[in-house]
Image 1 (spheres, rainbow, N blue to C red):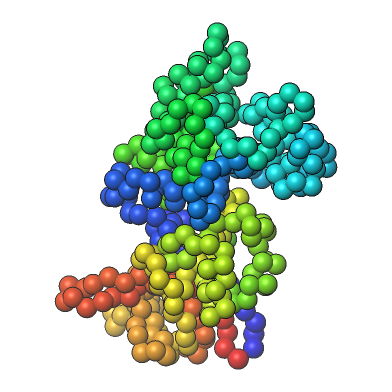
Image 2 (image 1 turned 180 degrees about the vertical axis):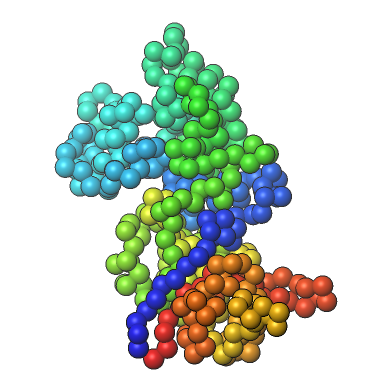
Length: 365
């Protein structure tokens, strides 16, 4: 055996097409689009239900939505508040949020981490991320902040009063609105901090949120090995399987019954997986097998057009990257074991056409 070869030629758009709705329906996608954008961004987990959000949890969300996201962890060497000891899982996030003026504590040196966050407290946090300080608000600080909050449409789809507490659903809407908002000093939308851009309809474009840190594809079949290979903690991660957000335990269950093809973004702490056995709304599928034939066009014997696996199905090679990989100049040949990521579409006769989008190859024994 010559060893494993992890090979990929997927583009950022190809990954996220499977995880989000297509461009034509973004404008009407509503909360489901917002939810997936927030999940892809890594600001908060999107499979943890819709209960109320605590002040400590909100501090973590603020950090995850800021330029501090990659330099702040759950570990802290100091205790800033008596009720948030340094070994508290939110200690470092609370310290960062307070030190930057996004949140504040209470008299007596306490933070009240388990108290539910109110809309007016959350408004202070997101306005601070946009660059607004106390000096920007005169007279009634809370009232002035809430006026600016509404003026910037940060309350879109929330519909609560300042003293109301926020649920996780409210926070998904809030941070989506933040990504679309313009900072105090201008210069585009705030979401550029996380690599976001707007579509022509004025919504966040999930396809643009991929960057050069995207890793994959890779085949995984063991949870422990997968955890060791990931550069972030699993409790902080968001998981998508075949385009649908799933909880960590569901993700693990698929590994217990087979294998997954994964891509991941270390910055967003997000994993996209594709499975033969899982349900989902992805337009991408996976299949594993041995290459039995590589077909060429009779008029161009240098460029392969299709690959056939030992299941008897043929898969179209439509891009130059895929054609090169399966050509005599590439690294693949008949007899190699391979996992294909492919799309399915009907041809002019109503039959299904399988087209290779990406692959992971492993030499056969």
